[in-house]
Image (cartoon, rainbow, N blue to C red; front, side, top):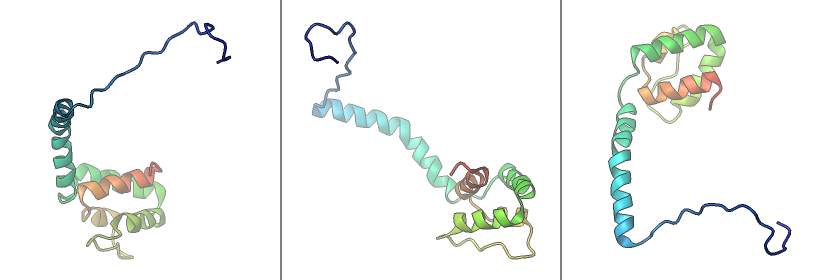
Length: 115
């Protein structure tokens, strides 16, 4: 902007949000309808065991990246849970089977470098 009046030749659209109690109630109901199933699935993933596909993928990643890297990331992911760390002679696939779906997702992301 130059500060001179009348030099602007373009306009921006402005989104106006109504914050009335009725509009807020409708917005919250819509958010609940959309996000409630996602929250429910996320809560289930915290308790359900990892899928065979996740275990297979983690095993493949462990082979590619090495057991040391797997152990480091595995320890970070299970921190604060009741999952036991991998023992020195235990296979990575056996350790991965003890993970929940959510923790397996976290471990995959960490091993791929997306965390």
